[in-house]
Amino acid sequence: MNAKKLACAPEDIDIHELWSKIDWNKCECFVQKLQARIVKAQREGRYNKVKALQWMLTHSFYAKALAVKQVTTNKGKSTSGVDKEIWSSPQAKAKAILSLKRRGYCPQPLRRVNIEKKNGKLRPLGIPTMKDRAMQALYLMALDPIAETTGDSHSYGFRKHRCTHDAIEQCHIVLSRSVAPEWVLEGDIKGCFDHISHDWLINNIPMDKEMLRKWLKCGYVFNDELFPTEEGTPQGGIISPTLANMALDGLQTLVEQCIKKHKENYKTIYSKIHLVRYADDFIITAKDRETIEEVILPLVRKFLAERGLTLSEEKTKITHIGEGFDFLGFNIRKFRNNTLLTRPSKDAQKRFCDKIRKVIESNKCVKQKSLIMMLNPIIKGWANYYKYGASGEIFQRMDWEIFKKTWQWARRRHARKGKGWVRNKYFPTINGRSWRFTTDMEKKDKIDYLELTYLSAIHHEKFVKVRHYANPYDPADKSYYEWRETYHMKQTLKGRQSLINIWKRQNKVCPVCGERIDRERSWSITEQIVSGRKVRTLVHTSCKRKMQSRL
Image (cartoon, rainbow, N blue to C red; front, side):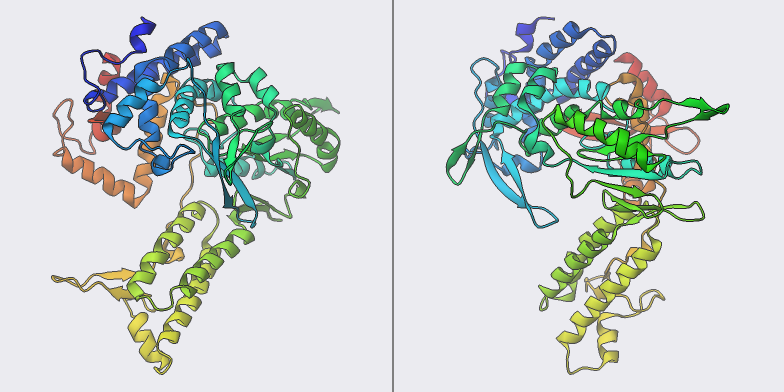
């Protein structure tokens, strides 16, 4: 393939029309094929081939276009760096594609802002310029397939198609068995992003060394003053989470192989060492406390020291599973009847109550409708996160706390009215359910009700964990991820409604064969890019296989 051709935009298209004429489906297919080839070459140990494919990807027009599209459509598209520049017009985006060149590239300093953490401390955040973000997104396309191939199988943070619930479910799998380990090391790395060794990253990350060095050494601007960066990778950069993950990869293999299974008195003795990691938070299990103190902790400290990192003494604890431990907002504890429960932690409950209380107390004079519209997203978000655990009892308790605050809010507004009058106005009986914090919308044709969401009404579900060995860039696992997406859509009411809407939009027929889509034949979801947007369609499974065989 001609690299020069890949690096250039189509010659017959004017710069003003370039962005609108891009075939996004073609871009996606080209990049995905190169990423699949990178995965294959990495598994075969052909590292020179990997470098060649990375160079081809980072110099291609299609990849550059996707990189610009990514940084101009995400949540940070309106946030500028030190140059105060954003790419909002199609012409600016087209020029940006042509400006993404390695030769002569020099990143600008980061714009430093501080955001508050849940414990009250400040977290430094570095905001790159739009061009630097696009360049990082471009090189991340070539680096991420390697990171997914070589990464720890039970690392779930900042990885494609993985989330916190996967980590919690893995903890449940490891600790719920009757012969499960009973001691847990709760590990937390002190300032992981801020203290990673630059030398280690440059020597060990398989990407363009010069580009990586420039990003690490670019410095930051705070209060109109330029500061150099001698260590760490900035939080806020697109490529930073992947770099941090790759720096910690290998810890799982190290601890799991430190003690091998052996035989004593004709019985096989297992170490019961398992690691579950989400970004810089991790747990390590063992059969006894001595194994953690004498074997695992020294290994972990040595592993981190090589990368310029240390464990946080405040947050690093050794806990018995009977006492329980907090991980990613959940409390995981095993009881005497050998039952393991994952429930919202006490800190998570307190933060939720404080947030609800703050919203209600700061809006004492607003209409009931406005208050409900402010509270519902908070309640639904919290419920959707914790609905996969044993949260029924806690949900009822939180509902009681919310009721007390809304009742106080309603009584304050009508201090001279009786309790019965306040109840009838703000807590009527709706569809046979009493004491519902509800208001009518007073529409012209009919009266619709806006009701406060109750946590106890949220349906609890069993979370299906992602396969730990699946690779999102491997074509062999593509069908699995598509099935997983379809499964998650069917599990939620919103998802089911979305499927129904897609089904009706297609006139209930398959766009490939023209036959009706019903329950008699299996079907699945596929995505196509039309006019720069991803459009979901329902097709028969057999038709989908035919489509994939033609590609």
